Length: 112
Image 1: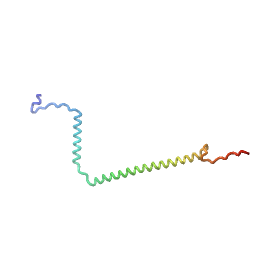
Image 2: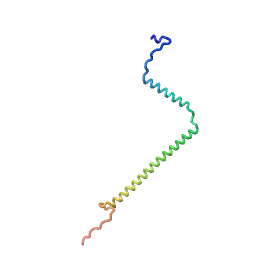
Image 3: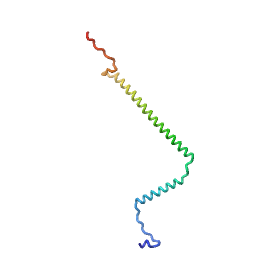
Image 4: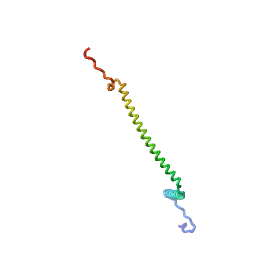
């Protein structure tokens, strides 16, 4: 109490809570960033046009990538179907046990 009553006296400050300190630092950083954003100049017409052009090109590339993936998957399916049908044909041709595609055998004559 004696320190507080003196005109130029300083009292010892208690240590601050770490959460309060972190909060105050965060507020300060937010303030600085907002201040920098206010100081920036307005974007020029050319920058706006470039930004729009980049977005347009990005959309076209995305559409092109999607269409390429669709066409590649369709080509894969087509190749797979042709390959399986070809394998079925070869299996019928080379498999001696199955008579589905082979020439029919004639029955043996009854009287010889």
